[in-house]
Length: 616
Image (cartoon, rainbow, N blue to C red):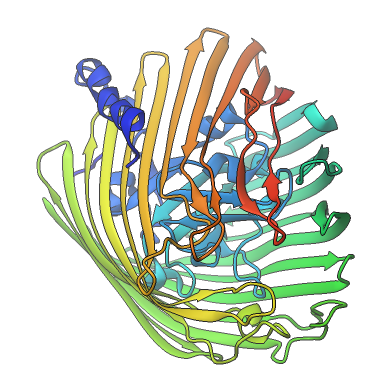
């Protein structure tokens, strides 16, 4: 295909999405082709291979380095909130339990990867998003839609991949950031990167600490701290062979409200991996990766110790024939919860089963018959706990003209029951079935020099959705669930303006009752506006979310909300800058979840942060 270039709420959201492309069209058609990289970036997650956003034949959103630098978020969930197809819920601010729902699926059905390494809890299933420092990452890719045929279990709603900082040419290049603000918050980070003689390196560290805010009205402040270290190095030989390693470790303590009392949890989040890549021939390259991810926590209130490890061996072979590409691979993954204890309570005890493995083979074909493109993938998984599963996908894209591409896709995925789902004393259900899903999607993208727009319609049908019940009831399967949705997005770079807007409508329905799945908002929108003014920059974000229900019966409603975040930057000397961010500038009290006793988990009000940065 040609080389192309780079997002259903109501009322104002729809008007903003419709008006933005009209406002920039006149200038876009006369701009230079070299200005398209930010609007049509390379994406790796969607196809296991570098493709521009429009070539992926997928619904994708990329948050690049410039975006993350401008917004300077205090948490990963802040940068994801309101993005197309993304719904975020939190039990308060600053290191409190958080879940990310992609296209109405559960947190356990949203796969998180860091530089190609899967990170999740083998007990809870989902990722601990709240324990990741966004300053450790250079960019993020959000791929919506099933990716089970590429990544195996859990990629039902899609994949979020975070990328650490790339090594810079030459060097060493230092970077330092110091800042703080509301709630006695302090943030420090430093890094060093460079390259020489085929060797590339990047080292970084960060520390975040805050007194926090109450998560219950009238409650105590709930603090949080996080210390993260990163090491990444690789070497490319004259032959083209490459070896490298990555290690990222975050640890700290978070305080939370347990039945009106302050409780604490110590945690560790870690990924580590080594890889080797060999160009066997001009048209065949082979890559072997060995990795380990750890999710650990010690809860002092309940006396629980959860120590989960996921070890993976993945072998990928990429074959190229002209414009076509085929990937053939195999993967072995072992989950372990050995040493975990569920806690000092009525359900105290270890897990009945403490380890399981998964073996898989997979293949993918990326075929280019310009103006037609075809992408197909197939994967077979053999899991020790739940048996065999076959997943696949087929996507077809057609270039209507030089700016517009129509795409259609079908994909299947599955989610395996977690150790908690199956074996948690008093709650686990060893008879659970794995979730299976089918998704059909139709989309169209308009890619211009200075702006783009994207629209997608989809339907996901899930059999045996896994849900936790109220206290004292075992985990169960919901027989049939249907999720329908619409996603609209648009972005532009015009003169000194950077503009982005997104709107999402999702209808996640339990087919047996007709009710909406609990804790899912059906409508959301996000608008980002930034302006460069010489040495200064100004910007803001407006995030809107509709109401949701706390319970499966849809009787306990949580109201929607709107958040305004403001930011300003000042480049006061070469390599030196200062930044001010004001989160929740209108001091909105907003809620996304509730305690078991019916009280709201409240999030932080207005918060201002100032930081000084040195380096590129």
